[in-house]
Image (tube, rainbow, N blue to C red; front, side, top):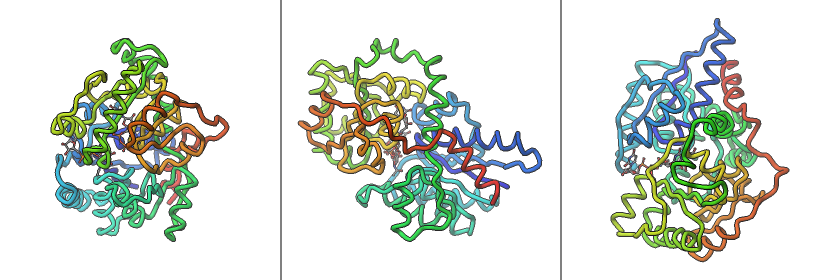
Length: 361
Ligand code: UD1
Ligand code: UDP
C-alpha cells in the first residue's frame, strides 16, 4: 500500500510526527505488508521557525517533494498547490492521500486526490465552528465531503458529520496532537532550556499566541487583543508571546506597540510544550494551543467567539472571550481550573489506530 501525506503548515508537521512513527512501527511488525509513504510539503510555511525546526527537532524524514508554494491569496495559494500536487499524484499513483487539519494545504491535497479518484483520508475530520467567515471552516467542510476515511478526534466531530449526512467511513479515533504531546513532553523536559533562557518560574507567567485571520485582519480586534495582553502584563503577570509572522506584519503595519510584552520569535515544539505546561494561563486563538492547554491542565482564555474544541469549554478549562479587552483581562487574571474527570481526546494511540484501520482496507 502506498500512502501519500500532504502537509505544509506548522501544526501539520506536529500532527504528522505520530503518524510517521505509526507507519514505521507497522512496517517493522509487518515486513511482508509494508506501507510505502511519500511525504509532500507544499511550502505553505517556509521560515526556519515555521517549518524546518520541526523536521529537525522531531526527527521527521525529509519531504520527498517540496513544492515551494509559499504565501499568497487563498485562490493563488490553493490553486498553485492543486496544480503541483496533481503532478506529484500522477507520478506517484498512491493508493491513498492523507491530509491533516484545515489549512489551504489540506484542501488542495484533498481536492487534487479526489479529482483523480484517489481515496482521501482526513485526520481531524468533523470539526466545525459553524463560522464560514473562517477560511479553515471552508477548508474543513469541503475536505470532509471529499474524504473516504474521516478520522474524528472527538464524539462531537462524529455528530457534526452525521448532521451533514456523512456516516460512511467515519471513525472516532482520538486526537493525534495528544499522541504528539505525550510522546514529546518527556523529551521536552529533558532537552528544552526555554524556562531558563527566558528567566521564567513555573506558573509565573502567561503564554500567548495570536495568528488567526479573524484576529489579525481586523484592526479593532487585533488592537483589543494587544490591549488585553498589555493590561495583563501591567498587572504583574509576565506575558510571553511567540509571535507568528502574519501577526508581526500586521502589528508593524498598524504601528501597535508591544511595550510590556515579552515578544519572541516563533519557537520550536519542544520549547512550546514546555512553556505551555508551566504557564499559569494560556491566552490564544490557536486551535492546537487550546487543546494543548487542556492536555497539560492549564487554564486557557481564547480570543474567539466560538471554538471547534467544544470539550475544552464544556469542561471548564477554556473561556471564550471574543475580542473584548475587559473580558480578556478578567478571564486571564482569574483563570480557573476545570473538571478532571473528563477526557475526550483518546488514549494517545490515535496514529496507531489510524494506520491499523487503513492497513486493513
Ligand atoms: C495557516 C492556516 C491556519 C493555521 C496556521 C497555522 C490557512 C488558510 N490558514 O495560517 O489555518 O492555523 O497556518 O500556523 O491555510 N508567513 C511568513 N512566513 C511563513 C509563513 C507565513 O512570513 O513561513 C506570513 C506571510 O506573510 C503570509 C502570512 O504569514 O502571507 C500568512 O500565512 P498563511 O500560510 O497564508 O496563513 P497562516 O496565517 O499562517
Ligand atoms: N507551536 C509551536 N511554536 C510556536 C507556536 C505554536 O511549536 O511558537 C505549536 C503548538 O504547540 C501547536 C501548533 O504549533 O502544536 C499550533 O499551531 P498554530 O497555532 O500555528 O495553528 P492552529 O493549531 O491554530 O491551526
